[in-house]
Amino acid sequence: MKFKSSIVFFLFTIIFSFAFFSCKDTQKELKVYSIIHDEETKILCEEFTKKTGIPVSYLRATTGEIINKVIAEKNNPQADVLLGGASNYHIQADKENALEVYESKVSKDFPPFAISPNKTWTGFCILALGIGVNEERFTKKFPNKEYPKTWDDLLDADFDNEIVMTNPMASSTAYLFVQNQLQRLSWDQGWNYLESLSQLVGQFPDSGSAPPKLIGTGEYSVGIAYLHALAKYKSQGFDIKVIAPPKTVGDVDCVAVLKNAKNMEEAKLFVDFILSKEAQEIMSAIDFTTPTNPLANPPKEAIKITDTDLIDYDSNLAAKQKEEVLEKWSQIVD
Image (cartoon, rainbow, N blue to C red; front, side, top):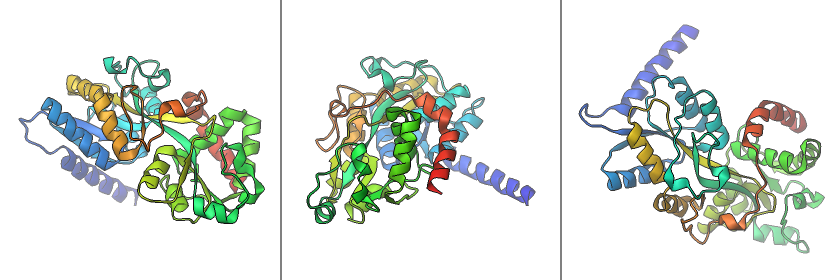
């Protein structure tokens, strides 16, 4: 069985690679591994080609799949750029010596947390966590209560089975929330908070996109999700009040040039473009993300960086503690 599985995987890899990289031999293409959504990837790649004349092909897959490919191919990369993925995943790739050092001039005024200390990755948008409230359901169930404004407000016993958040075992969004509390409150107090909150949560879906939808459709009164995801659902007509609590956590979606990239100069130009005002406004217009470029103007529905109160998030610590934290979480929930 193991032998057959290996053959199937080998054949799949050949077919997959051929489908991704098939092009005219004479045509020089920039190749991108993308973790962000297909819609955004396609538009950004097309805009880059319009501006530079450089053709782009891309492979879009999940975070784990892409990062594993980047690390496995580090000595002979099959792409030039890694687009998307939170900082801790880029840190993981960097520790495996899979990323190239590149400091774009475009990022000179970016916030410090958006730039790798050794200049191997740069954040192009901020993903901050927040609270979503279904206004109609909340008002009916809690007519005399104010909306929760802080993380601590969620510990109200009246919210039993009225809160939805994703499962930290499956979702990077929820793991970020867990780290938010551990780093905001300290290890012991943070776990006390998480244990109390977990008793009130009615559902732990695996997908990070689930809470905004479940809140918007009125299945729960309160939910925990990325602010931009809540804002996007609100813009689509869902009944959601978006709240940015103080001392929340934000991570950055990052872009990096791959070590030993075959199209090194083109890859650097692509990174410059992704960090530009133009590209970040395109991204924010689609997903309501918060740009890291201070010159970019997000749509009114997006939360501005000046409107968020972020803790000094230690992504290296979060990456180091991940196995221990998830083990402890599983003990609490089970």
